[in-house]
Length: 356
Image (cartoon, rainbow, N blue to C red; front, top):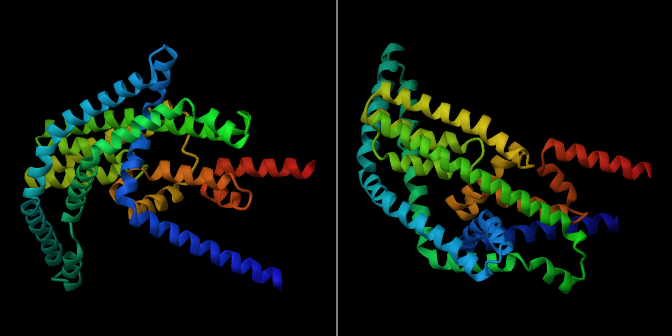
């Protein structure tokens, strides 16, 4: 009985601790989000950094070269896209009104077709087609707001890159761990860096294709749809769908149903080609997380950190999974979060242990 009470007490304390930590993360997101972006950029660029160090380029110079290149890219992209974001945000209410008129017209047509069915008209009142366009504007504006901390992000990134080559030696000296004991975290960080690097390349290609598609069809603000496709491609499965909807609605409002259909078909082809053929061949492995957990992680990290949390939901969930795997008491949670392949491997390991 005492053991049962102790277990219940420990569970309650653990649950309360999780709630406190999550609340703390949400309250500190203004400070934490720039550091998360810095870590994200550092993981992508650490390989070029280490390559330059191997070729006898001093660490400080290598880090400055990488950061300067990223700053130049962001400055050029920001200058090009920034004005488009402002124009789109200003024109958004008029686009949403026109879209509402189109939707109400369609609803009225089908309501008359169904002999004036009022329930169908009420259903039309519940639909908010402008929500997707508003979501696109919120994501782009939120990212712009985050990048106002550009100096904090880049200084943090420089120090992370400078520490990358010495962290294993420091951990071994501080905690007495051998290099072999750090193998799992090293493999995880390597896989995470590879994942983010490949995902970034594929996202850039996806964004360019989306921008070219919308520009060819004549949809307004093609640079915005390219940027949105690039950003939301980091969100597995549903990100590409979310990125396509505002562009399709814009084509419908501006040009008509024919161009909207062509835009939808074009986005579908882009997503199939890059998401189902090119990316899996380049990646060679999955993220090691259940698809359900990917979706729940998207909602959870988006709630905690906002739009940036949605974009970084997979790396954050993978990091959480690694932390849970490191403790025997929480390893079962990591198995539940993982893919079917991870569960089969854990089952095989358990059978081997029991047979010994």
